[in-house]
Image (tube, rainbow, N blue to C red):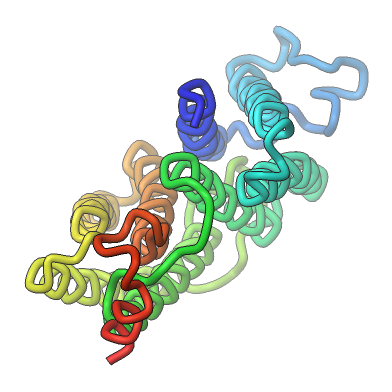
Length: 303
């Protein structure tokens, strides 16, 4: 694979996560309505004006980063377009991720027009997580190539990993609801979802700790059986440790904006690491030891 495409893939993933970070900055500095309309910043200006102050700068800056991400998406799609027949997997990934970016822009605009409705903002974040997962898959596929793939972990491990991914998704979804009930609405007059924030913080911790326990189990099995996913599971555990530590700190310190922003970015890193674990449970057949005996290998893994 062309080295330039690998660079584009990493930039694409990093930019997706960075956009979540700047979106968090918008919200945590009460700049969500810094540009009070969409797609223009004001009724008469495409860009922010001096009268709008720092909030206008932050909100419009986030919109500009969204435009930059769109350009990266176009660049990735063009780079893959010429090889779309032999690398249909990369073509589909860049197409889906590329279509997700204008969808994000529209949903972001709707959230502004609806005065930062917490449920619309939540959908905005969910799509960001999905795009991070797609870009993670893009990076993985750029490095591993195309062709038939075989499972390189036992069936029981694969089932446990998929259960863990489901719990990760639940953790993120409950976290979105928790944030929607908390103090960081993006604007002083923005509505909240009306749910009990303190109760949701406790509920949010339950799937988070279950994710942690499941990940430790995966790591122990991966090391005992010397599975090729052990590094990715280890990375997943490290992200979870930082996420849990950040969650405990922000809960005990009264939800300081800086820590909440880090927590949001780490949620995307968590999704990327979990996606990596799922992807690395399979490997191209021609890269497996004893590639001529793959049928016997698959039969052994099914046992």
